[in-house]
Structures are given as C-alpha cells and as structure tokens.
Length: 271
Image 1 (cartoon, rainbow, N blue to C red):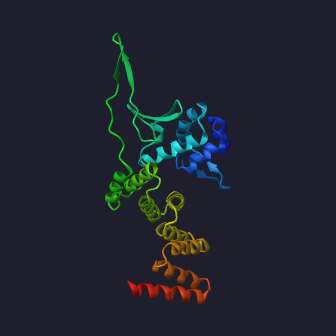
Image 2 (image 1 turned 120 degrees about the vertical axis):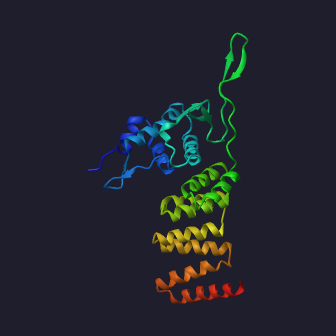
C-alpha cells in the first residue's frame, strides 16, 4: 500500500481547491509519486511546500494569478533551492516572496523594499539596502549557454528562469528542451517544446526537436506530424526527410520512405 496523502487529503488539510493542487503539480512546484492506480500520492514535504499557496487562496487572489506567480517562482530558482524555505504572501493584489531579508515579486522580478517611519522626525528609512535587479532574460540565457557542458543542472534552471521572464525567448526553449531530453526528463521536455511553440509561434527547430522526443517515446504518429510541421516551416530541413524515411520504412510504407529518402539526398547535394 502506498503511503502519503491523496489529492483529496491535500485539499482537505490545506483548504486548497483541487485545480490549484493540480496546477502546482503541472508547474513543477511539487512532484508527487504515483499510486497503484496512477493517482497522486503527496509526501509531508509536498504539503509543507504547498502551504505557500494557502495564504494566496485565503487572500482571494485569482487562481490564474496564483498559479502563474508560483510557476514563475519555481522557474526562477535552481532545482536545489527548497521551496519550503521561502515564505509567500499576498500584498494587496500581488504575490511577494520572502527569502530571509530579501523580498521580490516573481511576476515582475522586481525586489520589494521595506521601510519604516523614523520617530520622532517622521522620516522614511529603508530597513534593507536596495538589492540589485534580477538578471535579464538575455543575460540568463548567456549564462546558461556557458554552463551547459560543465553544469547542465544550473544551465537548465537558468534557461527556465529566462523563459519565465521573457516567454517569447525562442532559443531558450530550444536549449532547455534539449537539455531535459538529454537527461530523460521526458514530460518536462515535451512541455517545454509545446510551451515554446505556443509562445513563439511555429518554428521548424521546435517542431523537429519535439518530433525527436516523440520518437524516443514510441509515439510515431505524433512524431511524423511534427516532422511534417517542421518541413512546412522549412522545406529544406533534410534531417526531417531522413527521419521520416526511417519511420515510413519501419511502418511498411515503402513508397513514402523512398520519396523522403530521395528528398533527403537531393537536399544534401545542395549543401
């Protein structure tokens, strides 16, 4: 029998709607195990982490804002940083994160400055020295690019932070999905590619990489569709024709395999 808490237990203990709990799982905020019937089984540590959403629900913030803010918060932090060490609260209609003496808004990346009134003069004085602004998406991308080989875990976290700040940063989705694919993080890689397509529009590179991933997952029909989508964007993508030839040959579609192989050879000669 699997230990842990069910989805119903979490909703009852924390007072969180199931939509919020599922959203936190989808965002990678928590990673529950699966029970014998593929149901979620949450650990006590998962409950501790999800309590960060409790005050936001109690403050009556919209569900979409809660999930967006917590998704961006998770993306802005390296994987090794425990979410349980952070305090998250609603300040007005905004989500603010407290990490020791530092406070920031995950939606905008802006730091929040605390101040107090000095008695008896009534002057404002900062409690904390101003912190430097968060790095730009482009700066995070460059850092990640330099660390891909030596520190792929850190690079992965930096790419995730970059797209959280700039959702249309195409190259970051491409590199992030590739790193996740290489590390056999299948679901994360697929989500990255599909989010990239949704945010950046049709792109032959994202379609092609997603097709490679789907092939590794033995989802041949979906991979074929993605290769064709890549060719619609870039008819001279020779590698897509080659991979389609292999899929068609394996599926007994000899004529289609010959056609794609001929296209592959023709494009290679043009290079």
